[in-house]
Length: 373
Image 1 (cartoon, rainbow, N blue to C red):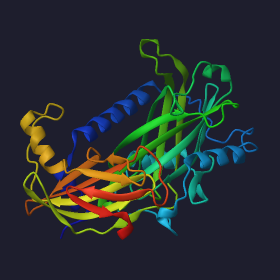
Image 2 (cartoon, helix red, strand yellow; image 1 turned 120 degrees about the vertical axis):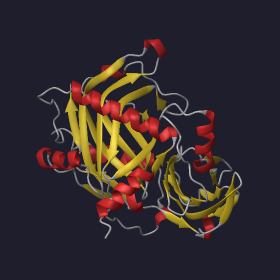
Image 3 (spheres, helix red, strand yellow; image 1 turned 30 degrees about the horizontal axis):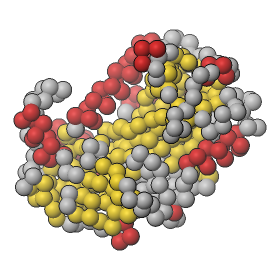
Image 4 (spheres, rainbow, N blue to C red; image 1 turned 90 degrees about the vertical axis):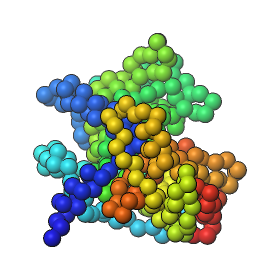
């Protein structure tokens, strides 16, 4: 009889990641290891909401929610579900036993609002303010409040409203096996001493269980300016937060089952899902990657073998005529006994969209209209 652990082990042995996914995971592991080595015995974090914040929080929440600019009509009357069937990370379990449970997240206007997910260190307080997303992708907005606003002097937004700052930060959602995305700073209200940090990420989970209901673990230990050789630190500390990924699922499942080809090999489109923040595509290809050689030193031949399985083009078209190339998404592949590979691509857009903003998703040479869902 096959046990869940046997299935888990077999899946691990057959799992392959793209070069981009490997690089992201390696960087995260190095960041986490460095943080553990440098962390002092007595943490300076205050894992509660500062007393002065509640009176201002409703106003700030309104700005954050407005900044998300979501109609969220894609998901209709979505529901929140707790994912199950995934072996937990023992370190995460111990963290919750000895460090306290993750902060709960309430729903407000269909957007998740973490309650009490806040940490203070060296005069800076980081607070999770809002989370929105779908089964595999999400955007989280954090407030970064400075006791001394002079630290922000000279930091001006570019023409797109993005501040020239970068965070030394990492995030992990329990039960995920791969993920990545992008992050940026902006200033919702230049008249206060708070800026915003947004992360837009896509993650893959076992058994397509999704990330809603899981625990987000976020850590940050520095914020620096992007000024080349003149880069300077404007905040250094130790901020660790954890909270429930509780939000309304805005996923729309599109028709699937279409047949196409990639580099002369047959492909079946198993599932396509879009949302306000990202796209996920599952497909089966009649090919397997095989041995690629040492990780991080792929030959041209090995790269070609990888691309022959993982490189199926995916493009999202929006109502304004622009497109988003999701080909180089967070991609995983599992070899099957019949010689095929089950591939999943998931990625967040470079924007947050509303109802009617997504026209179609093209997988290979198959265009799937969103209106057909």
